Length: 441
Ligand code: ADP
Ligand code: MG
Ligand code: MG
Ligand code: MG
Ligand code: MG
Image 1 (cartoon, rainbow, N blue to C red):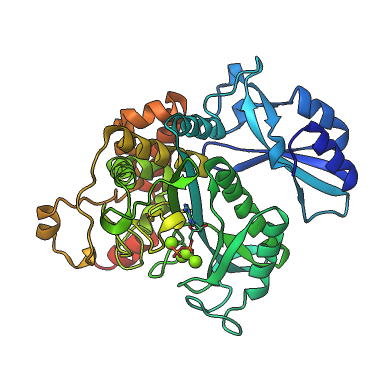
Image 2 (cartoon, helix red, strand yellow; image 1 turned 30 degrees about the vertical axis):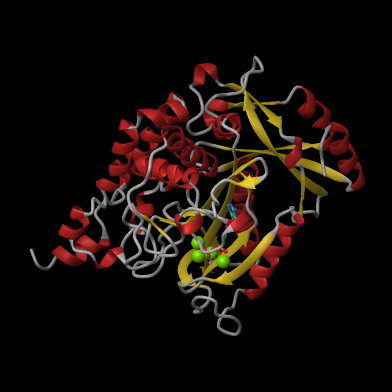
């Protein structure tokens, strides 16, 4: 375990590390990375490494572009590939201003800030994400949407052709300190899921970022393409990132209460109410692509209605069966194209606000909501998730609470990007329209 500067220097010597990649993520969750030779480590650990923030999406304007990367030494890890020119390690960094203050729009900073609020209320958030992804064939070096295999949920060899690749991803993640719980073929052809153990929100967000590039890298080494695109195939399941959440208080699971209905505490109910209250705006962060909204449609185990329930998988929020220390809520709307720091920050902020206001959620539903008519939905006050990125941007724009929690800089930039993405999409003429109208109109 790395706890201080001396541990880093020692690990570098022990493993004969030659290069260090300093990593951080932009507002969209894309990993950025600058590599330094090991000779620069002292400087990196003391003064930090400068970079041009104006070249990073959603960061700063050109006139205030000098930014500094401060490595978080607890994230030091040896990367298991690309060693032919020497061993490579990575550290995930916080972004600071030249005067030493943290940069308020750094996604890690935003998450830390909300985590601190939780701490002040006596809570720690535990997060366990389930990332789904597709493996596609490549042709002439280019990614296709031809599935790497024709397996379905929980299938195995010979139908599941990715067993070895999945195992290699699992082994690589294990080398990087992940505690892997399970891996399996998912519902769609070529679709997979690998689950790792939950942890505190910051560590888990770091893990999501790492998980994605490890998966992409291992796939690439094997000549296939891994993608976290939410809905690459029409008419089949998309890839989600269910977010399992619980709060601990004094080392105990604060969502568990054996004496209450469903054995879940009022704290859990307040948290659920808070998340449901802000979920339409959160979608703009947790479902940030035009494509994200093609996953949130009826028929594929993705949520559409803003409801919560026991084990029922048609709800937005499900309470998985385990109780005691494993009591948790599962938020099923996020997808793996999101920025995990900002996603966890906004979910946690909304949940904490529910607790502060002691808000009770509407009644849980224990039936299949997809069987209700429009009138029945209305009668029961059941609302739907936004149908498009533009719609979720409208909700985020109005959400003054999330604006305060994310900070104006992040809020403005997410909205700017969402609107630009929507406008670029809106003016396109799609194949579907040509097929539909060219000969009939
Ligand atoms: P599913 O039944 O939805 O497929 P999985 O078994 O794939 O669920 O994933 C469950 C996730 O929930 C794992 O990441 C696991 O570590 C996490 N988890 C378990 N207990 C808790 C808890 N108390 N708080 C938060 N996450 C938890
Ligand atoms: Mg799962
Ligand atoms: Mg599972
Ligand atoms: Mg799954
Ligand atoms: Mg799940």
